[in-house]
Image (cartoon, rainbow, N blue to C red; front, top):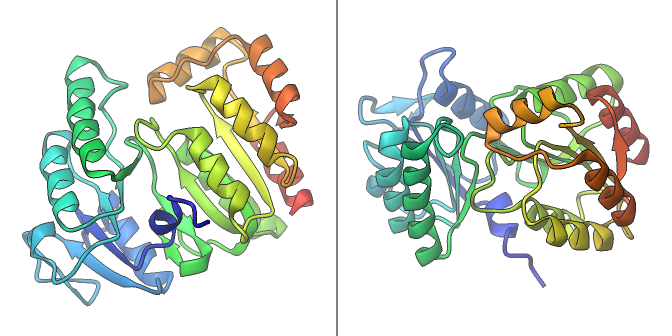
Length: 291
């Protein structure tokens, strides 16, 4: 059976709300990396102030595109996100990637926006990646909306709650060899949960090993159950922060995640068959050996 996330990670069309050509902007980096990766599907830049972006026709609003957008990336301030989500649903989005930070991890106002987003997507049956994430990479359809140029293709899947870790792992691949099947920046993971990504990657024929960077694990019992089944067929290597009080506080401030008691995490990983590592170098090197 085709996993429900397959269409999100292998879209036929991608729209970027907040697309830009202004160097250094998050919307510019993602639009550029998508164009330069030679994505196999259609690209819809959304920007009310531009007629063209990177040689592509730009649209003032997501509802103005001349087709459906399987995947929509939202790179706009928090107050504009609910309208962007509503428009994405109207255009038939299967998945919505929200880069914007400052939502649930920032306080009551951000939590209210998250609740509004979740209400809309649950009613529509749409998957949300993020918010407070960096984007995604999918080798099979040559989709790079991470803003990191020149990502090499291979068979390592990365699931991470930190964009900096993704930067490090892709850099290691360039200097040490190796490549990626999928890279998923989960961010706050308010929509698609970590165990749902693991279940998908367990079935993904392009993926031979799963490398994870985790700040906090919600639905811990379900995560362990899914990981235990996937680890029977594919190695899972994980870097879990929060061993110290400072690490736990950093996780909470970054993604709003509770790091959890480290002894419990250690026991759960052992039970699930997850290989635990201590730093990003080990995470890449051991996953690359498995690859």
